[in-house]
Length: 427
Ligand code: FE2
Image (cartoon, rainbow, N blue to C red):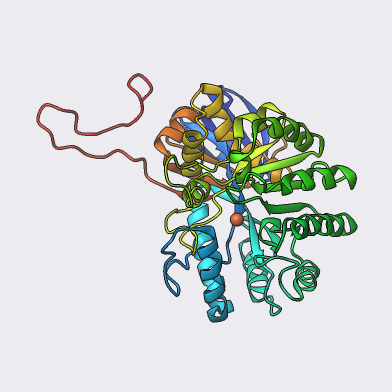
């Protein structure tokens, strides 16, 4: 007897009429039209069953703090960092934990069951680190939370910055972070990349750095990151986040850089909602978009994923944990409007994000963890177009969240009583 049988589902790869058999929290079988006795059978109604969303770049310690102690008036990255600095002395472990748990509830309701969160290690008290480790423990049964030791104020620029970061790792933080473009000079930025990669190699940890989050085309720390990944044999374990300066780089230089990133096995995480908002703030017109070169990186064989980065915090006053909103913005800003481009955007918040995070047992295949989301859409195009409702969210075969289908009622003479946003013929 199966624990769960889901019938009549579409899959992101285009297969239809699929049944998914679940036993012991894992997918036992995935075939068309399977009928078998199960404790629970769910008719997917021809809707899209996708592996759960993953956010490979977030700041859970800052989330839901928007307006504390004031809002970011200029909308720039640098005012956001200054504002976070004003907020830090006012933080308490209780408030941090409460806000992070509230965000994790939103995430689960949105089918987002894996988050890689940077956590600020700049303060010697490591208050945010301890609070996020507590959150990680509490949400572990339903949400896979990875923590990155993130020296927000610069690992070299902050007195004791390296020591604080190492202590955060000692406490159990999973990934080595960095912020080379915020160090005092380009040379110190490059030095920080080198020493943090060496630290990661020594400890056998992955690396995920905020890298070149600026419009300065000469911010080239991604080059050093790729080179260090290759030199230290860290291929497949290193991520460069943001990489917005690449948007403004010279094309010739980028033609050399892309193969270097691929050779270093470095993944890139773009954060479309935040990059389009924070970058180009010093431009008049035309204003640069700031998003890194997503289609070109993909074409070079680099794993590219999209992160949410911020929700209601000093940098961004919007957001709700919806990775389809992230994919939607990425698709527009990177002009990835072809069918393949749209599929790539969906993968950037599912399979490729899972790859960046190194998740084991992720995906829709026999043996994989039975953690998935049923969307009110027929395919990935509709999923992104509609930011489709998450009808059901399962973690290891256990139902975690449900949302009623979105079917607004109309009161118009001579028109149907209900609006269904699926294209005619696909309802
Ligand atoms: Fe970030």
